[in-house]
Image 1 (cartoon, rainbow, N blue to C red):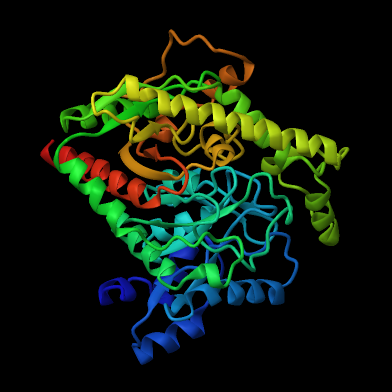
Image 2 (cartoon, rainbow, N blue to C red; image 1 turned 30 degrees about the horizontal axis):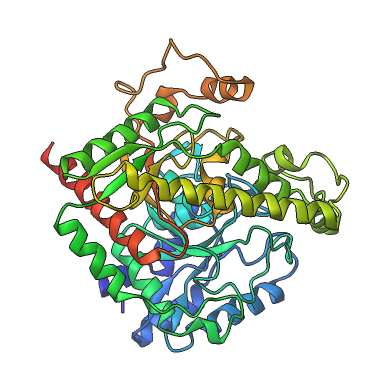
Length: 464
């Protein structure tokens, strides 16, 4: 049960006030919230930021989806307090739709809250909910978490239940969307994941692996931390888009912190991330946009520019079975090549093991201005690989430190365009984070390491 002070901070009145400051909710569940708080039952309070549907296909469908997902939590008694905002189609790194409009960043309303679980990120950032869940097929948990100063976990597919949720391109199985939590606290992420797994979700969702919470793996990692025997890969640049100055500084801070803790840090030189991102994009546009444009056509509403950037102005030719199979083969081969590279780092570390985790940017920028989120390579690569990833907040943009690099030479036209979008005056104070990446189905390990790094960064900040 969450502490009573956290319950009180998430009352319907408080959420409604915060929604007026920043429209981050589609539907605050006011009457149900007040009723449950009057009864003061032991319960879990969370916002239902599950992006349960996206094209306004009907409230009945969304309620049905939430009810089916809740079957995995039947004895856990989750209590949904709000349905946060998300972009129509879900396929955007910003949150905008035709019902509420644009959801901005609570820290700086000139900037985006991210997407697709952006309303979730904004609501939790405003303390309108202590914890919530989002979905992620290209960064939709991690980008909002990073842009709103939160921790956010992208588990590997099949670790947490997805059964019953409405989704875009349902039936596309090449790269699966996953569910994961967001919160101000890393311990909250661990608590909700462990509690959800205790309900044996594999009995309700045929795609969930029968893997309970593994206390032994958690303890093993804590013992390794105590002995200062960790090794991390550091990837500051994916070879496609150079991160903005505040992201570069956050990466330096993370690397220096790990070294100060006595851990090995090596430069990460994996197979081409461009290849991995290209595979993901072929999957996401495999149906030629038919599903998205079909849903949008029901209402006749225009497609948001943030979505049209990836899907154009209308449906295109769909991939046939042979092309889909070829993409699946390319993905498998890429995953194998990346796996073997990870294995090979045993020759570079001083621990006798390959690196324990990878540290890299989640995006080339901190939160951007509206319609400026243009690149998902840093986040989407982990969806191609299906690696467990957790966002760790690091710092804030400082216009005095994070000045424009006048010696910058772009790698390509897109790199030049994204670099030009950075304005230290506008972005000053925005949250900056990194993502900590483990291998597939290493949620226990990743959460322990993320907490280790997060606590160390906080300790250094307090000392300063």
